[in-house]
Length: 209
Image 1 (cartoon, one colour):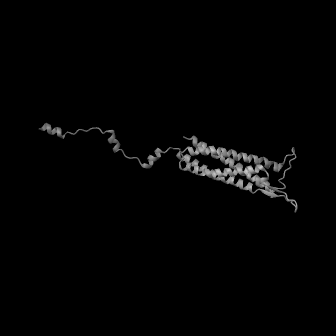
Image 2 (tube, rainbow, N blue to C red):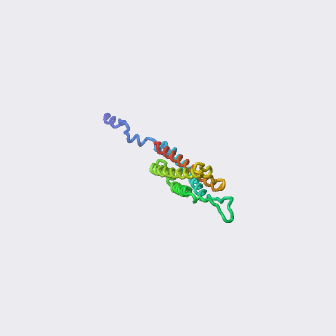
């Protein structure tokens, strides 16, 4: 009888299983868990995306200003008489017309690219919209710089002429016209520089893992 009583009172201590140990383990804080799951460079890419958006707004201002300035370029020579009128307009030179159309196209593209830039801010790890922007940004950079370079050659001739071909400068007679075209050219060159900065930032964001 005593032996049976002793066997009943004896307890056997078994080691805990892995499942029981996991159930008893303390839960991680939700914010810490999210921080662990998020890639460490998410904040960097989001900052680059915000900078991309701001630079696009600045580029819109530059291209839009260049387009409007070129469209309003015009002057009347001071020696105009009652029967004879000398006037210079931007549409007198095909290069200036190309410049205005090209910068108008670039301005429209920049407005359309803002939603894609916003997507990059909301989803900084998304690669598809950023790659799409890099492709079209490169094309628009070439168009912007091509139009600015073409206008730069005409503006140079307007200010200095070319004695080898007997082309005389005419900016002394049409000062306002030359000032407007020169300002539009500077705005377009500034837009091209901003475009290159945007492309470099996008390439840097795509390179980071």
